[in-house]
View 1 (cartoon, protein in one colour):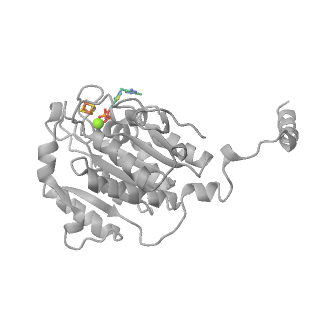
View 2 (cartoon, rainbow, N blue to C red; view 1 turned 135 degrees about the vertical axis):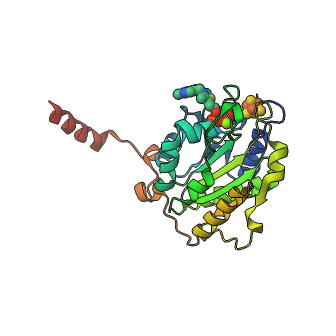
View 3 (cartoon, rainbow, N blue to C red; view 1 turned 180 degrees about the horizontal axis):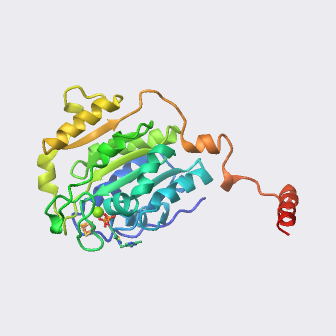
Length: 288
Ligand SMILES: Cc1ncc(C[n+]2csc(CCOP(=O)(O)OP(=O)(O)O)c2C)c(N)n1
Ligand code: SF4
Ligand SMILES: [Mg+2]
């Protein structure tokens, strides 16, 4: 039997929104019958990123803001794995912003969950890129990941969930994982995950969230329409949740299929001494 790491009890504050993500990831993996040894979770640095310690799963605690590079690397090394990257808004939208933008364009079939609490929870509640004006002296308007994601014309799955609606989150995570497992590319899901200790937004967000599927003209295959609907909602002070982009065409063209194709990937390749020895000796001779 293949072993996976044994989980430890969560160290999060009671009521933290990240508990809903933990439960939804477990449920979605069970629903899709993903064997634990085939599921890998790469966690970012922050309260959110410690999620992999609380799952019976194989995982990596990545460098701050570098979890996507490591998750894409895992997928390319062994494309048969289901790979989830999970971290916070500080991790993904501040130090990790460059990797965030490129992940849509690269389009590897991995799921990226950002637990957005509009603060740096682990380091005790400083302002993050998604913080509102006035929070901890912040004077900058908040960054909107969904609008940015929708502005990149790549065939990704894009959605937002709310920790106050764990059932809705499980349905969306299951769809995202199915999308990945069909080799269709990158899935991005931002979860609104309140930090009850430094920025308790549960009540406010319950009032402000709006299900995009209920807005007139909702069509997640129409990127322009969805950008307009989400921008209008933001301008009205609402927070859109739901599936924002689901490509119309069903194409299995994830990065791993383009680069590794139908081979097993480097991790599962047979490594024999011959003929690699001759190639290695030739390489060494070239350096002399
Ligand atoms: C290179 C580097 N810079 C800064 C830090 C300090 N640091 C640890 S977690 C964190 C931000 C956490 O915020 P977020 O990603 O939103 O996660 P949360 O704790 O809110 O879930 C920072 C700045 C670090 N660990 N490494
Ligand atoms: S500090 Fe905030 S984000 Fe971190 S565990 Fe506590 S409630 Fe959750
Ligand atoms: Mg955060």
